Image (spheres, one colour):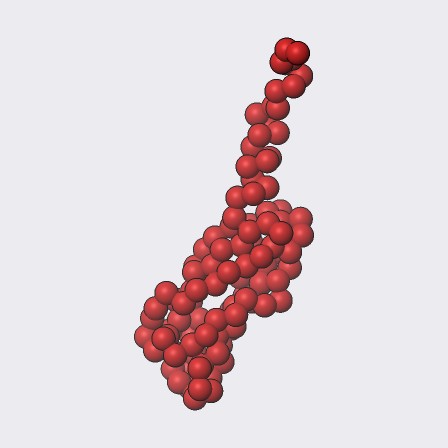
Length: 105
């Protein structure tokens, strides 16, 4: 059996396959002002996901940020919300630097 030209994927086909498995990524800042909870919306690049992706968030520092847990919620094909919860529910002022990754589901 020999390989035929029609057996080789097109450049567009290869790029489409790569795009389908490549995560979206970014960073954002959540600021709380005398609060125990903060949140911010994140938008994915247009058309990146056909179904809601798996989203991972991490706290990478900032003033007062070590006291917060992060959760990615309300995930859709177009974006999600990062929620920051102060670990003992004390109202504090903080700047929380967040990095995020979204992988195709």
